[in-house]
Amino acid sequence: MTPRVLVVEDDEAIRELLLLHLTHAGFEVMPAADAESAWELVGDADAIVLDWMLPGQSGLEWLGHLRRQESEESTPVLLLTARASEPDKVAGLNTGADDYLVKPFSSAELVARLRALLRRVRRRPLLAIGELRLDETEGSAELAGESVVLTRR
Image 1 (cartoon, rainbow, N blue to C red):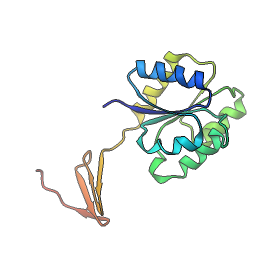
Image 2 (image 1 turned 180 degrees about the horizontal axis):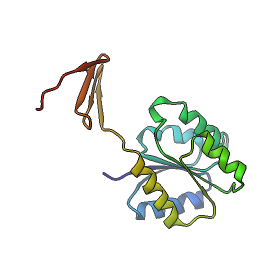
Image 3 (image 1 turned 60 degrees about the vertical axis):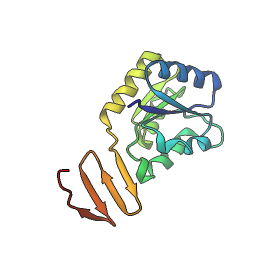
């Protein structure tokens, strides 16, 4: 399965460069130019590349809100920014970024960091229909919050 990466970057040239390099590296890229449009795509992302300096809402504010969402608290986020000071890096990591890369950046390093983040997080295939939840990875099921015993078949 091709990993899906949400790229939230307002600079069109950088966004296109990221799209080119990540697609070439085998990722499916979902580009967003601002924080607002990123919310529409975040549920489908396996990982997120996030710029700090976005119009409207900053990437750091967006990240803080993302980490408060229970469904997205484990989605890996790589903060990609021109802010290179130690206090900025600490703020980004403390807000919930899993990694931090300073612009200008090497595309090879970006790809390597994304692959490392994705190795650490394994999304579990989950099927939900009404109150029924099936976890294919665990081979378990719940109905209305109660565990259901499944046979081997």
